[in-house]
Image 1 (tube, one colour):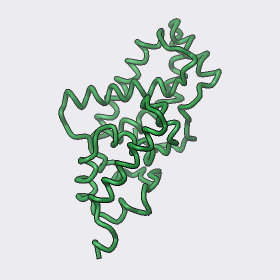
Image 2 (image 1 turned 60 degrees about the vertical axis):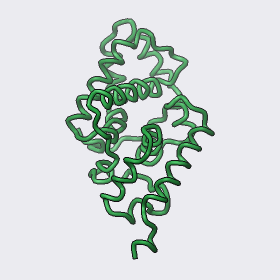
Image 3 (image 1 turned 90 degrees about the horizontal axis):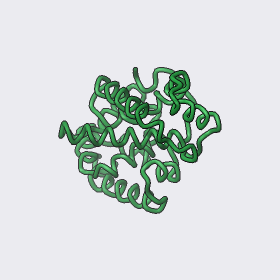
Amino acid sequence: MPPNSQPSPPVSPDGTTDEDAVLAVRAGKGDTAAFGALYDRYVEAVYRYVYYRVHSDTDAEDLVSDVFMRALRAIPRYEPRQAFLAWLYRIARNAVIDRARRTRIQISFEDALAHPGVDQIVEPDAGLLALADKETVRAAIARLTPLQQEVIVLRFVEGYSTSEIANLVGKREGTVRGIQFRALEMLRTLIPSREALA
């Protein structure tokens, strides 16, 4: 299930639609069709999110299954005032963290650059990543903290706004801007400039 197998409109985690809330409440009361509708609506977004944090399609598919199993168990406690996708991303984030702790494998951002759906990546700094070879990018991204990696993925792979990312990671917008700024500054120091490459 490649992240970009079918074009789908972007979904915003900032607001829960009335339909999401109704479906989630019904799912929390045991309505499997309602949960299935939420799954169909958000499985691609969750898959893209986890794909860019793990090594392979197989790992991503396993993780997506885990995320939706966790969501199914937790949905009776879901609060409709919270955006459903933001709630789902928090579950996905925890699943990625748990998997990384279990496997102790460095999550690679490099796979995102080599992935066939790379056309969705918004370049963070006038081609900063495009000007460097893949090994340099891999080494640079590996030096970021897990939170910096997450913010970079959400901003420049998924294309979310700062306010949406703040909602997803449970931080203030100013904090997210600071994390993104520090991550980009670090990437600028680690990835050679055009002049250095000449």
